[in-house]
Length: 374
Image (cartoon, rainbow, N blue to C red):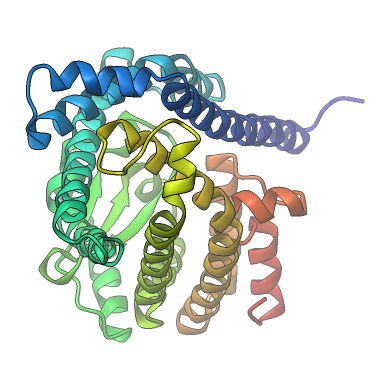
């Protein structure tokens, strides 16, 4: 019996999703294993001693050490990174990005990631030195504050590094979006579209920024393929997060997770460090141990954070449907975005538990049809 178009899409989606899940698990295991080998074999200690020959100043050693281990990690993980972010996306016709552009993005992402990591790590060692008994709380507060600063600066500093902004040219669509924002009592700087299609063929839209940087962003891959009603429903969902104070709730949860992480490091690190022949967190060679803590804690916390996120997403869907009163547009939009992004519409419960921070597409459509939040 011939395979229908729907069957072909279903099989393609399942294959793509399965590969993405597998690659995510491999990447996590690879990263933890690499860190354990790096610190357990003594390579980290040897590297720190070698750097100490040139300078005893920690604020010179930290950038050098972080650069070398970041470069080493990037080179070792490059095959996996290249396959998951370039080959796989092209294989499933989700990207038409050229190799040279992919390499440019990798370089820019590497520089941005390094600078952010350097600020956080340098702050960690400075605070560790000056707050002997309360460093875990002080560094937690700094990390939380820094994350808020990044959220405010991302739309005007980071996103433009990777995408070109332009004011939404479709006047009718812009007026509908601004009218929706006014009805939901949300202040928006303006509406912009970005050249998503140069990197990926997936659709996306977002409401980003804080204060004067708050703006609506539409990917050209979404703007050109969806009706006004469908786009309005998408943005009603994004605005609903703001109306329902979801961002504040997520910041609170993430802040508590950061504080708990550093507190666990504070009370257990002495015993954990001894396993690797290290005596103090102040030793730069112990930095990979901090990363191991965050990897493991992140794995433990991920299902809980996913559960909370899924609840918030359901609430945002419910409010968006209530305010737009357009069930048909919501359902057609979900069907389109699932096909365009090859989203797993009905994942296995374990997959959903570990990987999904949104309800599945089928769940969201069922909720819309039933007229109540799940």
